Length: 476
Image 1 (cartoon, rainbow, N blue to C red):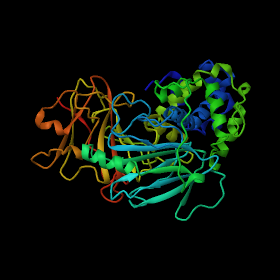
Image 2: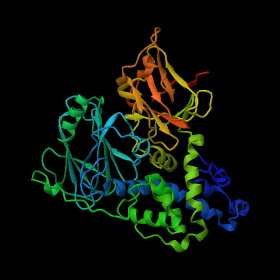
Image 3: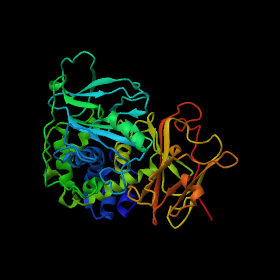
Image 4: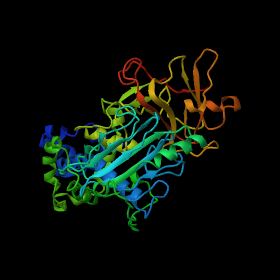
């Protein structure tokens, strides 16, 4: 993380803190940073940057993932289901922090014109979840094994202003925004036999406009926009936008993806810099010299949340929160999760502890070897499943000789004589007899993420703090 002199000055401010700082104090800090009397507007602009980061990122993600004429690989046109047939590999750059435990079954669609009907087949007891995210990354509904069971089920996802009747047997899920991202996940053991079983289920999912429900339906071909960058990672595309372009897009998106009612007090402040929901951006109200500095400082403030947000716990080198999926007015947390794990679930469905340093606080590096020891009976307590995933410093998968990006119980982990379980985290093989427990690392810096799907909510549980993750220790 890049923490500059500017971000250090702003990083500790909450989104509402600027209102509590006197104009004279702001002027003094503004002079120190070379902004003169403009610091108050600068703080407000970085607040707006943070507020809009999820909506901007969702839109840029939508553009990349749907910019094809027909479904292919990890992309499909609007309103068509992406059926990921195998786990992503190290070349995957569309979404940060992808997983290698479930087969994504996803789609972007727009409910602004009419509802869309989503049909789930009988999943035959298999673990799955189909979270639906609005444009602000809130998970507004999540059918799945935990919530609705594994029987066949059908839903109509309706837009913010839609009113009407639905066919019998179709349940309404109302989206707060026109943009909807269905980010489904189906557990798969990764064997040829299980891949085939999941592929059969994926092919039985249906997504159609309400006007075509119950009728033969052939989705139209997608329109390809050659101006969309299909190679650069979405997060990098967002981070490279200057403030004027960023706020122009934000205002356009808010016309069809309205902010929540609870956002009104915050949005009232943004009018001062030309941001008004339902209206185009008034660039004349934003100082021209903010163009590059606002995105830089805004993103620094987002990433600084690892250290200052009280909702993020830090245990033995593992940082995590149980405040994902539904964010309310915690705009910094919402932006942080967008930046490092777009599409995160509600905590009842998944918790994502992340570690950048070992148990002694030293940054991970592939030049070293590490081990995580789980005492007997202390493996992650979950109703679904758990895994430990390896990422490079940009939260992307790491190339390795086993093409293994995560380690979990499906590797048939070996236990020690005392019943404990060791996970080996290192660049080179720990030996053939230990490879089932090996998570390959890169030669440079790396990040670990643990996924606990459907974590226990009683004891022991990561949600209530009655279970803790062991730290990764450097092997001397």
